[in-house]
Length: 212
Image 1 (tube, rainbow, N blue to C red):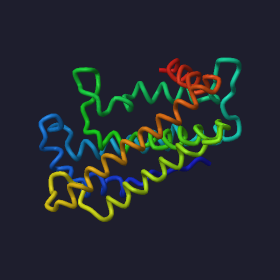
Image 2: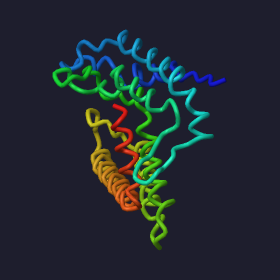
Image 3: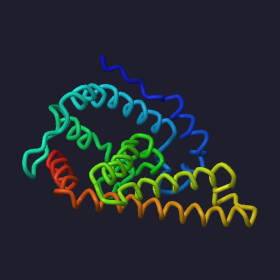
Image 4: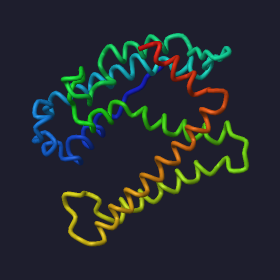
């Protein structure tokens, strides 16, 4: 069995209530992305995740990717699933309609494309697991420290730029921006390390592009 039920109730609450989706809907680019339409998108995204992606978990764990020279091959079903993902338009949710996208707010895309978070973690892991130098853990430590700083600032200060009312809040926003920049630099460091190791990441990216 490959039962997977995305937490739709929590997703709806965060997206439609915590983020004040009505305020986002009032912005001109998103006037047609109604809450009812977003709810339908979430339902379909959950169905796709549970019906297409989830069954691939077992082969991903037991078979894994195969590397043959400069070519990386994913387990059976992965290429077809990604092709279906692209054909259904999931990767273009936040892109402008004039460029072939669907024009949804970025927060909707974040909910349906949460794999980016996993990709970030995988990049950091590759940066130290595939590196044997004396500073192998530095990017991971810097990334973790940046995330802790961002979390602490989020907990102790108001980071909503539309509701800043104290000088301390303004300083916290600047500090959070700096922490995000440091996090991105650490991710770039990890990615650069991985690219230098037999072009492993490049081969994976090329193989993924072939399926689109």
